[in-house]
Length: 75
Image (cartoon, rainbow, N blue to C red):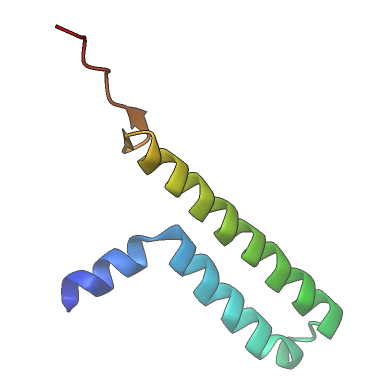
């Protein structure tokens, strides 16, 4: 369970979602208008979806750790 928490907090998507949820939930207490909260939630949603698509694309093409693996030559 501790490993799961460590990996969750290492995730940029998880952190963005958590911080965004806190900002939206507590926004009115800090003077953030409803319109601004909606814009913040939209930006975070776009970031998380975009990052998810990018991650999916990298795994589809065999990219690990941001670097493409060399192609194997035909023998």
